[in-house]
Structure formats: structure tokens, C-alpha cells
Image 1: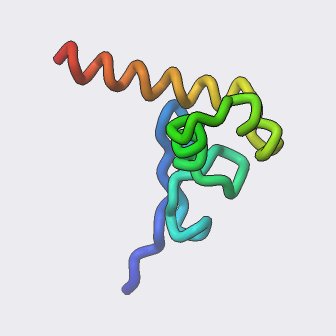
Image 2: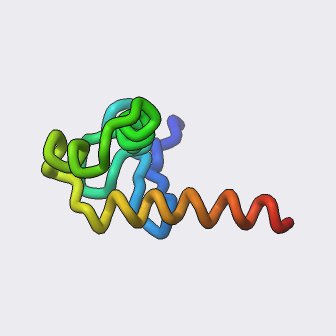
Length: 80
């Protein structure tokens, strides 16, 4: 019997990974947009506003929440 692929969520459900969506690449909840694109845009020196204009399916609140989640994870890891 073959196991059924299972979707996973992270960042309090803000990010999902579903084998049926982009092969399981982590995406913003409710989209097919990889979360990595946000970090790539910012790392390349582009603004959050430009990112949000380019990808209107991601709200400012969602993008900021994912960034804050990343910050919190780094802080927790360093505090451990």
C-alpha cells in the first residue's frame, strides 16, 4: 500500500508545504507563491513594497508575519 502525501504547515499556518503544490515547496498559505521569493527579493535589496506590488496575492500582513516568525525563530535558537 502506498502512503498518501501529507501537507505540512509552519509559522502558525502562514506557510504550507503540500506535495501537490510545486512539489512540496513551502508557499504562502492560500497561494502557489514560494516563501523563498520574499527572502530573495529582500536579500537582493528590493523593498517589501515592491515585492507586494509584484505579488498581490500576498498581503502585507502575511509577509510581515512570516518575517517576524523568522526573526523569532532565530532569537529562540540563540537563546537555547
